[in-house]
Length: 149
Image 1: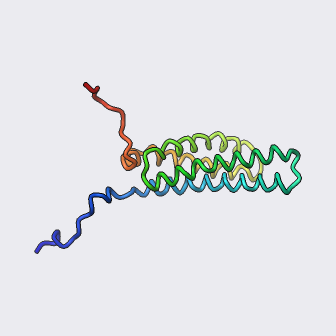
Image 2: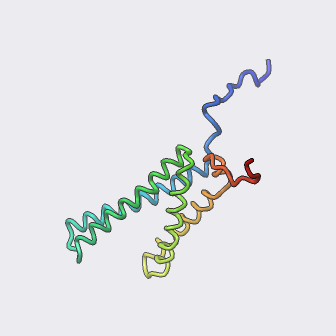
Image 3: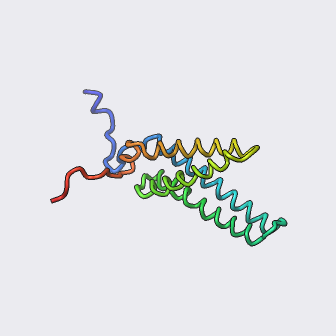
């Protein structure tokens, strides 16, 4: 009796195991989405209960941040479920984070470390999203090398 007969074979419906890089990039995307949503909720509360210069502007800014926070949260869920569509929103989120990080880096005080952290998260997520293993795990095919007849 060989050892191969004793080991169970993986079910064909299970598919290949999810690479760790997908879990990491999903966590980074969820972190960014949560930060945006928390910032949006804070702006909404301050717009309603605080004394902002322009309550309408604070409320609209809060709603905008809240809506923008949903994009990376949906992308993170899609990445965990290995949906090919999820890479697009995740990439766009990271590309949008880079100018924000640059602006924070050019500021003063406590905003500089925030800019460094945001830049590090965005660049790390971009590298992981563009990795060929991630692309294969999400089922995204590369460009065709031969024309179809």
